[in-house]
Amino acid sequence: MDEAELGAAAFEDLVREAFESIPSALHELMENVEVVVEDEPPHGEPLLGFYQGVPLTARGAFYAAALPDKITIFRGPIERAYGADHTQLRAQVRRTVLHEVAHHFGISDERLVEIDRY
Image 1 (cartoon, one colour):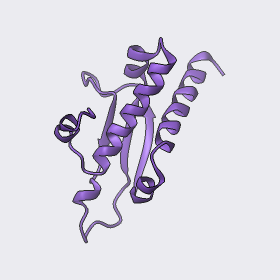
Image 2: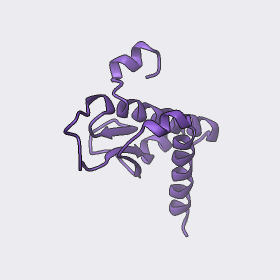
Image 3: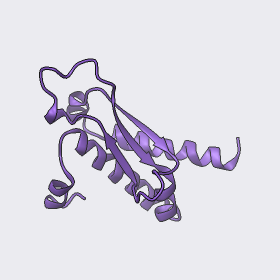
């Protein structure tokens, strides 16, 4: 395994650790969502993470047989900004995961700013 693969695996471990840190009561409410790691966001997009899907608060009686929601965490920008300090890197990965999970629960960026969680 080369150095890049080791870095990717270690980063994925941080993402998994962050996702598993969510309290079990919230985990139980999460439905039809997957978390993935990609190297980079779409060209020109300054993103650390991205949520795609139908938030739990917007799902109605007709929500069925839908593809899973997707939370994407972008390794490259997070490592470039925080990779020199493992403690800061771990904290930013957790913050990014929790931010995108908040979107799954229907919490907007505006509301996250309001509650000082952006």
